[in-house]
Amino acid sequence: MDIKTLTFIVVGLTFALYIGIAIWARAGSTTDFYVAGGGVPPVANGMATAADWMSAASFISMAGLISILGYDGSVYLMGWTGGYVLLALCLAPYLRKFGKFTVPDFIGDRYYSQTARTVAVICAILVSFTYIAGQMRGVGVVFSRFLEVDITTGVLIGMALVYFYTLLGGMKGITYTQVAQYCVLAFAYTVPAVFVTLQMTGHFLPQTGFGATLADGSGQYLLQRLDGLSTELGFAAYTDGSKSPIDVFAITMALMVGTAGLPHVIIRFFTVPKVSDARKSGGWALVFIAVVYTTAPAIAAITKTNILNTINGPDQQGVMYEDAPTWITNWEKTGLIGVGEAAKAGDEPMFFSNDERSNVRVDADIIVLASPEIASLPNWVVALVAAGGVAAALSTSAGLLLVISSSVSHDLMKRTLMPQITDRQELLAARIAAGFAVLIGAYFGINPPGFVAQVVAFAFGLAAASFFPAIILGIFHKRMNSTGAIAGMVVGVVFTLSYIIYFRFINPAADNPEHWWFGISPEGIGTLGMMFNFVVAFVTLKFSKDAPADIQEMVESIRYPKGAGAAVDH
Image 1 (cartoon, rainbow, N blue to C red):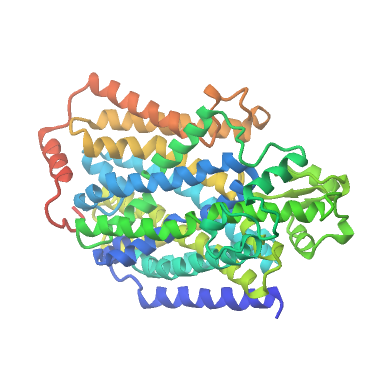
Image 2: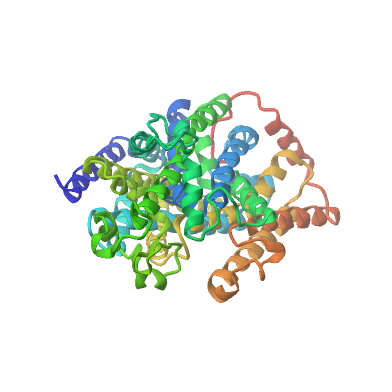
């Protein structure tokens, strides 16, 4: 059976599963819609959290960036993994104890200010829109190749599906859909990895194959071979880095603290019955995340080795286009691969051959999706990877849509503008807001400002510069007042957003280390924005009154949790 038919079958079956779960777990109240009734078991919540957090950037683009950037790409792996540890250990249990539906809800009540709540709503929407653009782009990339439609059509298909089950199920439907999506994406990620690792190193586990010798009898280690192939083509060795230490630090830190400030991940910890369950679900999520994240470096290295071997041939003299394998011609149709002269026309990284006619430009977002075809694996494995990529993108998109809809309906309307509206009216407002959100997200998915992982990195930077300081100070600095928190959030997010817009849209020609502040790239500027946030908050506190006594007492009760603390709407 051909790839297209198999993909229709496999992806269609997973779609039917997701829709069936959404119908079964449809939301009947605002509590169901926002926090799944607060009754999700820790293991299920851990699995749903892993799916929510491991977006298209994790599934599709992270290994691609590691493959193309080599050592420099490891910042994404380190930053995202470390950030989740920070979130699970330092923030999640305390936020669960506070018992609010959303992050803006926490900030509004902790800082006793509707202005703080409104600023937080704006930041949540901004972060979520930036993030969802990457997910919609991921869906479009998958569909453009495997269903043989253009990227725009692929984005529209994904948009319609995710809106349907978000609209119907709310957090309750999303949670159990994400459990299924985690199973699909983890299976789809690891099965091809096992095949390609066995093929190249003879090892069953990708984690051990990454550091093993090749199965061709040469005695060379995988990374030694890859370093040699890279240097022969005039590139730096795969294991050498070109980024400056300050930029590596800044990107890693921005991804770490951005993870700890992501509203769609934080809200997952409000869905469990007790504070202790929030801790347990955090631990389970780490286990489930590790399945994919410890596999990514092996996929990156093996796939790049296969690509370089393919375009240079066994004699390292280059393979002519007419002799190129079918995976190159298949992906060339999507515009995500350029060959020969077309390779020079794009901005994506290019793998040079020793014959100019077989130069290949490869979009980072196809490395994982194309890896089974590059390794000549069976068609059913290729279809499985397509289903996994769609599951990763849709699971995170659903969580982000819920953040946007709840920020508008609950935090902006119910808590600020129209406190008299009924539950039914609030649910209607949430669903309408989700509709507008998915349309805007689809637009940016069709017209993205970069690779999937780059777009997502911008979202993490914005979260780092806005939410992280406000949340961490709200929990651990009881004297911090509303004036300091508001000023810090505004300065942090405006600075970070302005920096990204300037270098990516206004003056992209200046997007290089010579023009960056302190050598920090737009992907890492959230670290500097976070520092500005902290500094402005503390300076403002110095010249204003401390938080009221009752707020300080409330903060003490959050830091020393006793009991469950049900999620309620005050």
